[in-house]
Length: 241
Ligand code: FPP
Image (tube, rainbow, N blue to C red; front, side, top):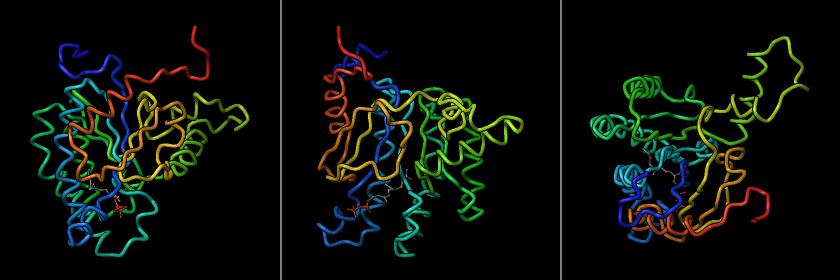
């Protein structure tokens, strides 16, 4: 897969997940409102998606808005919603040109109807794109995902006892159903936490924490993370021969 690229590590992660942290601090360092940091953070997403395509990544999952983010000041919540709407509007052409399939993971029923409609339209319009799947996690929480999967399994199997549910059953009812587990989880902004992101899906992921703030996390930083990933020995709980 893309082995001819100059900086491609030997082991390319199939599924990369990113906690995009540090927008507020990036803005504060420049004496600007936090919302400017979010705008700058959103502006860098396109180049990173393209870099992932170039590296042969198949799934990129970005944590855009957590179930806990509703607790932020209302102007910041509105800015994040606005940026999401803008992203869907402005990036549609590029996503089509680059073969990006968009999926939104999370409970979108809590969003304004206009945003819900745009999300549905964008998902529909990109459904046949195959270069990469871009998952935007919005109003997402890892615990929500697991509880929702259990409920969904129950609906699909009304005659069965929950005692018969297997790990595979649950995996198939998560929002990431049909996708590979996360290989590499990146968190920017200096914290070393999972923060209720893809809890089930990161069970065997390599965890890469960097102090770089999200608006400064560019293709070079992504290369660094991939090189680090390529140097890791993944044993999945077993021992090496
Ligand atoms: C964390 O930084 C970042 C967020 C809560 C939002 C991330 C959203 C974007 C980058 C924009 C929307 C994305 C897309 C894909 C359209 P923080 O505010 O917690 O930073 P801080 O820790 O420095 O305060």
